[in-house]
Length: 430
Image 1 (cartoon, rainbow, N blue to C red):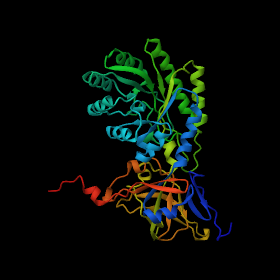
Image 2 (spheres, rainbow, N blue to C red):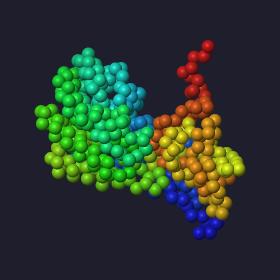
Image 3 (cartoon, rainbow, N blue to C red):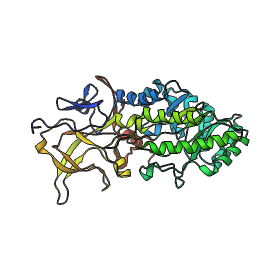
Image 4 (tube, rainbow, N blue to C red):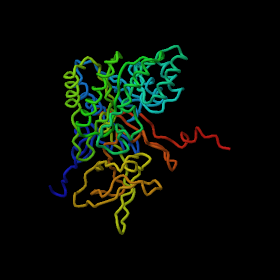
């Protein structure tokens, strides 16, 4: 390939993000046009990528009693929630704020599942009054409190007990949730006693069993190992005369950031259903709570190259997106591909530390990246649809980025850029 016609880099999220005539596009739109119109940093999502990822789950579950509940924490943008809800999703929430956001999206309350280890009494009451479909209860203490709150409102809380199967998800320790050393769920060995206690409480109605072992899982074996342990427990619970309506396997399926090869959702969950059938539990409704695998590669973050700074040990590329916009590298040492919006001759490439403007040495976006770039160029940080805007902050009094949703050859602003007035609004001063 000649220097004047450089090879296009691989873009996670293809074919929805792809190069045409040397320009990176989201579906039918040149991303440079969006950067020019809306400024940077800018998050851009592909609606077709989002619905395509959902379609893989829907194909696996076609004809079965099942509910896909998108994990709101992955990316809570209202327009994305509405897109998924209109496509048939329920929602998995972990806070009272996410409950209100979910209801605002138009989802039916009975299609909401409330997870999380630290539900407050206020959040419990709000969810009971809304009539949500299920509480995923994570401790004996929570069982007792939820029972009291339900009785105070004259209601029964539908509950599923989250079981910790002590299965290694083989992912980053910060996002592993299914080991006995993690804070999540009720220990597998204590679950049967917890079910007996929950069944004895008049404010609770047992509807299911829940398990979630972690995030960014790229191997099907941990899923299937956890499933077998949970099915063993299903048999034990039902032998006690406690009926279960559903089995919730959580989410956590990974995406390709660099060279990962996660199992396809349709193949993985077809295998899950086959095992449920083989064990005689095919009549249970299957609930899934995907987040990253739906939105992760449906989004990119556009950023401008500000400065090239040669150094004695490293060459630095300073961009206008920082750890407040893209926290995953600083938090998890995570990899995100970084690619140009317009291809330059390959002979101009150099190795850079790609860093942001935030006043922290931990404000890096990519290590040792080979890029042909000049100040003023725009870049795309790929695989930015999940756990970026949802964990973004105002550190250094930086406004959170604008967000745009692309559908075909049209784009819609779905979150305006945050201003200083937005930040100062809640502050009272002296």
